[in-house]
Image (cartoon, rainbow, N blue to C red; front, side, top):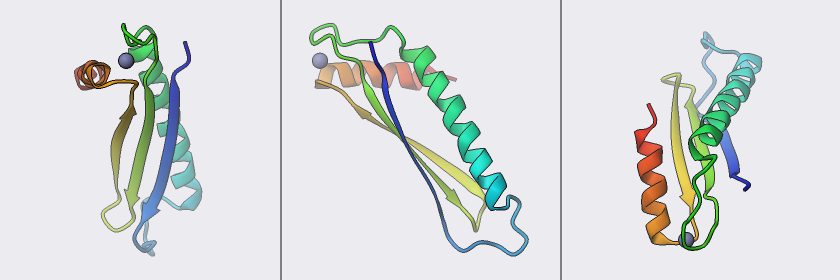
Length: 97
Ligand SMILES: [Zn+2]
């Protein structure tokens, strides 16, 4: 099966003169976050398919880094073939520490 994972990482706000992360470090942080979230999703969902449609879930992970507060907000958007599988995927997603 093939898990579909898309990432949409971007920044918001003005760059701070004394920013904790410069542009290069920010991109590195995005890269390592993509890698760790991607492999965590693959681990959690490697054997999770819809029992009725035999389809794997799709994920879009949105990460917004606020340059003002220097906080990264991560959200998961889940695509599934049907409503009941969506509920199961959400359960697995919420169980992850
Ligand atoms: Zn289904």
